[in-house]
Image (tube, rainbow, N blue to C red; front, top):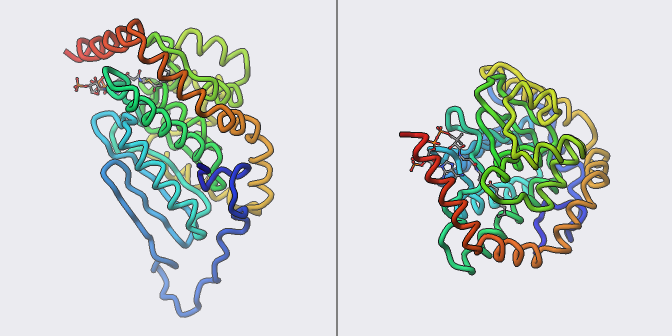
Length: 300
Ligand code: CO8
């Protein structure tokens, strides 16, 4: 299976110059949008595409914490595929409609007490999503407007640029070790490619969640802005990236990301087997149950 966005791996021709638009009509009344805004929405994700700018905004809307359940992952991949296949779309801003939370990462209940078949389906969906975002030919900007642990952090790391709300209560990181589980090699590769070996090594071993100001210092996010300015800033960054010719930017992105993408594609089935073996262990199930209980206790 080949996700349509994976530049280097894909069978379809590259989407160079995907958004060639006619100039604005002189008959266009001032103040009206130059092109229609198209939106589509499913249970967990809402997408709005502004065809005049070629920029889509994708909002997670799965309260309470936007956890990446199988349903969420599937909707996310389908939404990305739709945008990827729409030549009017050149970039996507990914953000959350849930206050204070970007995404709480993989839905832990999907990894607890389920069948081997379910684990396989779930993990394939996690892989699929990552291949789509990391290999997207579109410009991807994460507007991180809340906490973003583990899988939530991976989504942000897989984008081309990360802007975070400058709220020290919001944290981001790959905290798998805190749950007694291990981030897979492609989570690690993505992290290393953003922050470098030393920071990734320490942060992964400690399962650190970095408050926004620290995340900026480490290079885990590219900039912090006041929350109310986040979308405006994301649009400005997007415009800067879209000012370049698509083909040059896309080929450069492929050059930077191909090896890491290829590695998962080559080992996909093995990675699924490893996940099933790991997550099915009673010791891991116990760790995950204890972690869920800790979350509930902390709440009360
Ligand atoms: N999955 C499922 N349920 C979750 C998750 C999650 N990731 N996160 C939170 N919830 C649930 C809580 O249990 C709680 O449920 P309930 O209302 O039934 O008690 C509800 O969501 C609300 O949670 P909180 O009350 O904690 O909400 P807060 O706003 O106070 O805090 C946080 C939000 C900061 C997101 C907090 O919930 C949190 O820290 N969650 C845990 C995040 C986390 O550690 N995620 C890691 C997931 S693992 C992953 O993504 C990668 C795994 C890689 C696989 C490795 C191979 C095995």
